[in-house]
Image 1 (cartoon, rainbow, N blue to C red):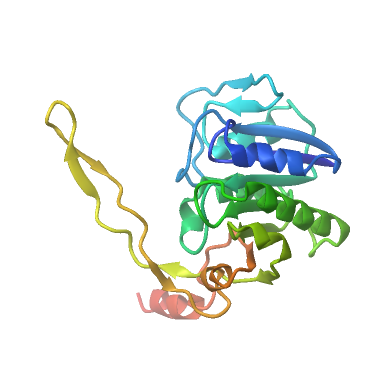
Image 2 (cartoon, one colour):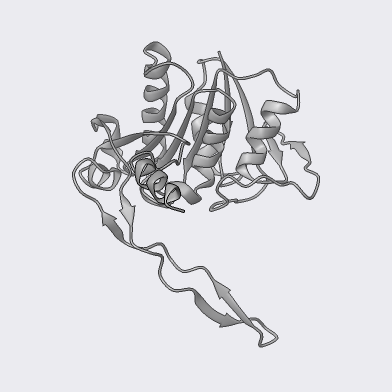
Amino acid sequence: MRILIANDDGYLAPGLAALVQACEGLGTVDVFAPERNASGTSNALTLHQPLTVHTATNGFRFVTGTPSDSVHLALTSGLIPKPDLVLSGINNGANMGDDTLYSGTVAAATEGYLFGVPAIAFSQVDKGWAHLDAAARVARRIVEHVLAQPPGPAPWLLNVNIPSVAECEQAPWVVTRLGRRHSSRPAIATTNPRGEPIYWIGPAGEARDEGAGTDFEVTRSGAVSITPLQVDMTDHAGLPRWRDWAGRA
C-alpha cells in the first residue's frame, strides 16, 4: 500500500502532520503539499511559470504551487511510484456545501481521483485545530475501513467533515449530500498604505439548504459527514429540455 498525502494549508500545517502520523503502519506514505497556505484555490494548476519541489527536514516534499499542482506533480513527475490512495487534509475548517467548489483540500483529493486513484478529503468543522488528535484517529478509522471494505469500484472520491470535539471518535458516520450556501457577503473595500482602493473577498454566505441529510445538518448534530463526490457537472435532468431548446433554433 502506498498513500499520497496533500493539503491546502501548507506543508507546515498541524493538520497535515496529524494525518501523516495517523497513517503510520498502513503503508508507505509520501507527502506533497503546497509551500504556503493555498486555501480557496480550487482545482487551479500553475501553467505559466515553473514549479519547484523541495524536501523538508521531516521528509515532506513541498511545492511552489497549488494543492492540485502538488498532487499532479506527485502523479506525473516520476518522483514517486503511483499511489493506491490519495488523502488530503486535515483541513483547518469545514469544507461543506458550495465550499467544495473552492476548496483546495477537496481539489487535491479530486486531482488523485481524476488520475484514477481513490481519494478522501478530510476537514475539521471548526477552525483552530481543537481536538485534532481525535479527528486524526477518526480519519485513520475511515481509511482502515475503506481499505478493508472498499465502497465500490475505484476510483471514488469522498469528502469527510469531522466535528471539532473530543467525542468525535464516538460519533456515528453518516453518508450525506452537499448542502447549499447563500451568496457570499459583499467584498470588503479598504485602502493600501498609498491610499489606493483594495478589496478583500467577503465571508462565505450562511447555509441556505441545511436540511435533513445534508453535510451541514449532520455535522451540526455531532456526527461525521461522509459525502461521495463526482466530477461530472452535466445537468442530466435538464438535458431533454436543452435538446428541445436547441432543436427550435
